[in-house]
Length: 485
Image 1 (tube, rainbow, N blue to C red):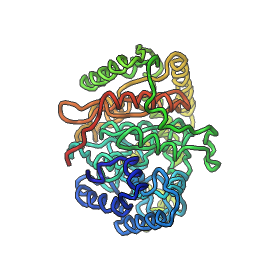
Image 2: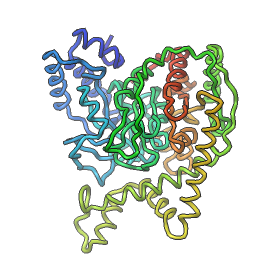
Image 3: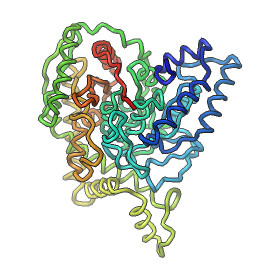
Image 4: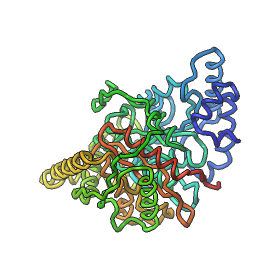
């Protein structure tokens, strides 16, 4: 079997047994990238020579008799809003097109201790604002299942790179579904951890109370293993949680008999495509046969989640993105006569249309006379949503819903209708507002040969429960399909 078809734990086993070298793996992936990358556009930065030289370095490290860790020599793609020292971090924006980070994000430091093999910096929606990966200054990413379709966003590049077998795993960020929705549309697995479980230090901020880094991979085991590596307390992140990190892979073969699953009726709304709905219920019936107890549940305040999110997230973005002004780093308009004109022209030319839209929405919501009516009220409703989840988890181990209301849509179909685009995240946004963990994994394939994802939601710090159910789903669905690219 080709090396690019193997999972991270299979490659790790082969490296430990000295059946393959890291350079063998790198050359196999390089061949694949050179074959498909022009069609997918998954990477903003990919350095062929650096990739191969790093593989040789890791081989040297192994030959010296050093410890081989779970991700030693494993090719991993990194979303381009995660800082990597001496390598471009652009956030897919013109305003940071040539920015070279001077430090590594905490998650990169943790992976470096594993001696991982970074493939490159993956394409994304500009500043992680989008659901289709069409909002990139470096061009849209295309879905490996159908090149006319979007891969989802904002982590479209990380998801597409794994689905197209250009990387074994990837790291993305999730502010309102940006790991789970592209995982769903690309037929892979993605986890959004409990808020604070993974350090945000070195993640370029979009909405600080919502952002979270998480893994994407071909299967649940790789995802769980990668989550374990990047999790843990970090004194550099004031929102980091001090909590024990269990061995997440130990939960995957658990018996789910007696586990209680709630199906929120507010996440099975009319916007859910009938084919998506049918596949979700098919999986629920499988889980029921395995002994899980399934009931419909109501979380009444979830109907306000989309409205709440599109007040809170743009407001925080308006504040966070004020630092990109052309003074300290990044793009600067050089033809301005005054400082004010330089600010205005730099930001007008440096930011794309969707980022400008969200900055303006957020600035309006935070402005004098409107703060109480919008931002403060949204935070109060957010508390009601959190309380709905708390109540639900007092009765249920996990909640299950579709990840995305539809399969991948055509590039350009929703580009001129922001509201329809925002509705793509209707099932994922509540999770971020509540700060709880969730996983998306394949539930099946549609009649037009596009993946459908199922979302498993857990209580705070109960990644164990979502992984137990995800493991059972993976065993039942037996997802072995990959895109024909």
